[in-house]
Image (cartoon, rainbow, N blue to C red; front, side, top):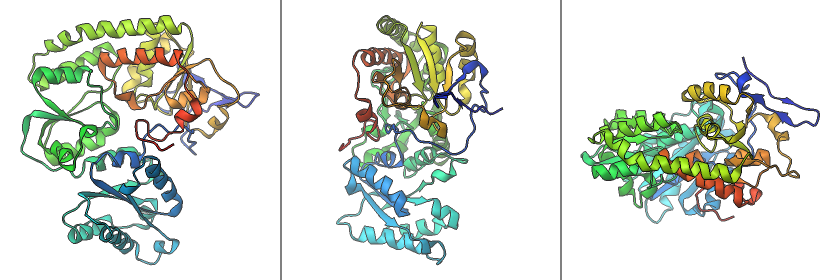
Length: 446
């Protein structure tokens, strides 16, 4: 059964107790509201990760405004071009040729051809039935020295694949199979760099194996070197579709090491990685002996500092908000609110346990239009928040400013998170200024 949040007499949204919510269908999925917390990455930010690449957006002018402003805010306009669609392109039979000729004109005006061009088609092309294969084949024939990548700016198609899921697949599509390097693996799916202090890197050092991360790539050749990896690993669920494509095309095995805050799951993941690296699984116990202790000590220090301050968590901060809430509740923290629109399937165990330990935690959606009334800029709350969206809805200046796990992993990640919670509690942030910057960790001209 779908749940609908309600408004109290002051027109402030009221959450649903976690013990009373339907795990499979927590909220009605209809018209979407987008809170003004801009730290999450969009397809422009992600495409910019490919070094020496250029982006061309082919869409209506209203849509162009957003992507162009994103590139401008990143100080990356030199990597951005566009072709504006007109209404008559929908019925004059020239949709494909307009894309081809528009992209060709842009290339011809360049002093030097880029190594890779990402072409973004829009909802209009899907509605019109545009043949992207015809476009791609013609562009490849005209400019064989360029790797052409098909990308999609289609927010209306969320019922199939989310735009960021599709973009992750496009992000790795130019990668080609190279001679295998047994001492080289690839970490895929992360927009932000993973902490080098985490147990993944410790295991790699033990095995004398180097790891590819797109954030470390300086040249297009660095980027293409992923094709020589002997193993692909990931810890964010958004990359699952892309990993299937890579595995099929390159015949490279993929090992998911899901981001988790559960002791047993973290250890299971690390032992799986140790085995894949031809290490004895007991090495995982050895390397986590100290980091486990440091993680719990960090949480204890955070609890002593924060006390019984109410805590709010949102799903933009981590793909496992329920698991994180469970970890904090078990360590004595006063988790009171969680902001999310759906529960990840792998959160069911943590959900059931959290319902028993703290059944009165309130669950709020982030995209329901009624959440327009959830934030009062004239009122500052006492909440300590983890994530920008919860900070916005709670109007809190005390928040941990992370997106998608913040590059933290394992027990080392828990240690780091505890430190960030202490810092967030002791040092207030300018909420409006901080969350207005697009793409957390990207350069911003604001």
